[in-house]
Length: 301
Image (cartoon, rainbow, N blue to C red):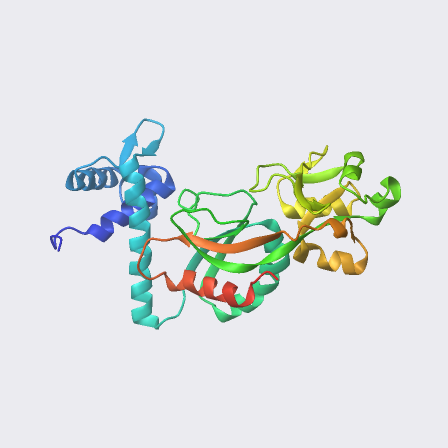
């Protein structure tokens, strides 16, 4: 047990404010303290811990490796404390903000239609949604839950699978009228293949021809940073795109996009996961509520 005259949770809260506000003065304003009081508290905290948490300069503060580790644990502890108080006062009601990082495709086609029901079911939860297909550092981006596509690598992240989707090569009728329809892998050399502008687990399109699976580089003149951007380019008649089936199902049904090379489909599927930092102990109810809701209603099929 720590000494009772040391307000450890208070020190943690001020330290977290300093990190998130980017300095002593803005943290002092947020905490309704003076900058000198914040500075003294930080010095006292570092002395008690026996390590430096922040490197100070006239222009900025920078976390040390020890400071990064302490910040990670402190934010988790403060969230647990807040959650414990809410549970004591409100039962298991989920309250608070959840920061979500997701691909634009998942946000547009699956998450957005679910939000009215989620917000109705969890009236005390607010969502901060960031859209990107790039893999992020959840700790550095202060993200509670990230929706990721593709195989999961070994890491400290905990994953809940949200299903998987086939991948389909499609083109707009206007493109096929202008450039013709490809019927073989060799035909792709004469076509504009739109692909992602960043490295992926499989860098190219997996197709099966003559009993063998080959990965065809999709190095066209146009690239995009996310799947929804690729879809819009395909709809505009820019070229061929290989997209998650759930994102183009309605476009195909409406005739806005046409599947091509279906006879060369290698059967590759892309998995989706909801991931979060595995710190041990129970998750805050606000985060657990979102994960449970997505596992039940937000699956990719």
